Image 1 (cartoon, rainbow, N blue to C red):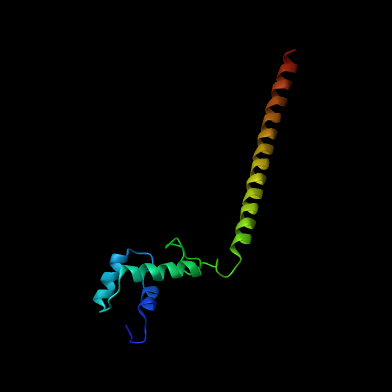
Image 2 (cartoon, one colour):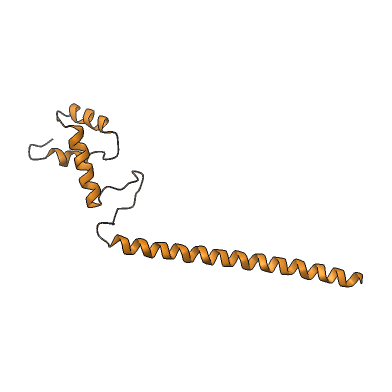
Length: 114
């Protein structure tokens, strides 16, 4: 680690999702002495700033710090509700058409027998 790099910068530059014990061992191998408290404090700071995603597998950047998250969240919830409503209406419409087709066939069949 260069002399002008802080421990927090080193923690941020390394895995922020793995167990703290692994990060401490890695730091020790590199000749750096860090504590769990320093790791947790740095991770909490990253989380507050919105630069640490909750999902380590995520490839999308976490933009929640740059946009008004509550408004976007509400908008996404509204869009999700609209999509679900449209799907329900489409499914209901398809079922209705199918039932109407079956009823027409049954009525024709009944009328032919009479």
